[in-house]
Image 1 (tube, rainbow, N blue to C red):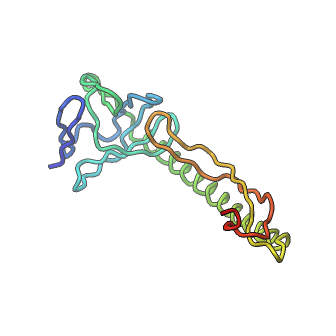
Image 2: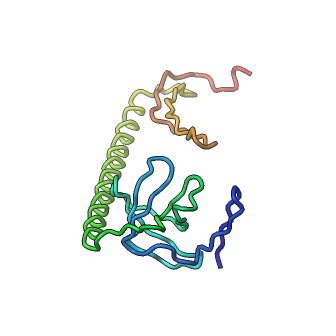
Image 3: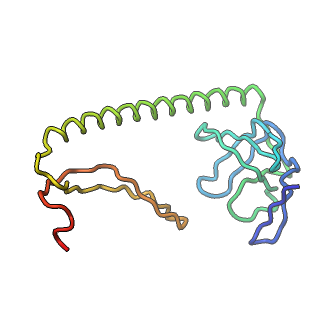
Length: 177
């Protein structure tokens, strides 16, 4: 049995017990307060896994814990246990195909961007070879970094978006010691 225990409330949740049905609409509390439809329910060794489609963005998602709206506490997925809301199975199929098309379009866009990046790397290597002096011991560079930190959590991260060659040196780094 897979139990989740809330550290805030001390409540225990059995994730092997199915609480919503397929085609049922659920609500997320927090962030954008989006609504989702449950299009598939999988039973795994870790409990029930609900596969979702966001009704606003038409993107796939999943969760393993959906609580009753009457017991709402904090950010999470909730279902209306007094008057449950359902979508027609045909509408869910249309929504699923639209979400699949969105996923494929995003994947194609990602692959095109990867291809463009690889082409730029090849061009950059060729240009670097052309401008590299024969007596250069070191390259002086600058990096532009993009902040990818999440202000709502303690996650800190960045990525390098651009590297620029400022110059070349005929000395190695141990000269300054």
